[in-house]
Image (cartoon, rainbow, N blue to C red):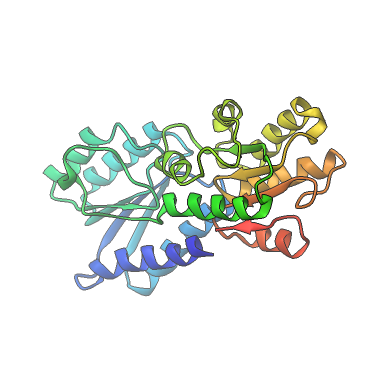
Length: 266
């Protein structure tokens, strides 16, 4: 829920800060369309731009940084008035951002942060407190298991994405018991429903048909929805045999909560 509210607030704030000088043209380098939340972000950006009379040019990066960098360079060449970036990874942005700065085009980061020494390369970052989100999930789980050992499998997103590292910082250490060797293999879930299902199937097979798993925690709803499907296909009951938790607030996760298949969502 929080991230859906943030989504509207973030895009609206970024659009509003430029609407006074309309008509404007803005380039949006979107990370991709890998999840329901990401699709919603794109739709909100379109809607907010239309409300303000802003021409919005969207480039789908297909979860590849090289595609996003190419898109930003294209926006610079077109002489857009501003550039939005939802960065797929945190590093490797300095050269293209310097090109935008040299062209006097302001850059705004949406949903994710980047790792650069020169903070003047972009105007601001509008994102959720991912550390807090991880902490809230962890606090809920500690209370839920009430001191009992809990083997948690963690479905992570794209390798190098800022959200992947910041969410993990908020998770409890060392209790409840977490086996990080399993978490490290889950980076391949890449924020997608299909990969979430695939990775969860592997863990169920490796963990005594899922009987050794206490909870699956995903860095977005789509991955956990895929995991829920894998749990059901294994003959287990999600939310009962294996607890589930995630982040975002897409419509399908609320249906899962109503059905008792998801307990914790931030």
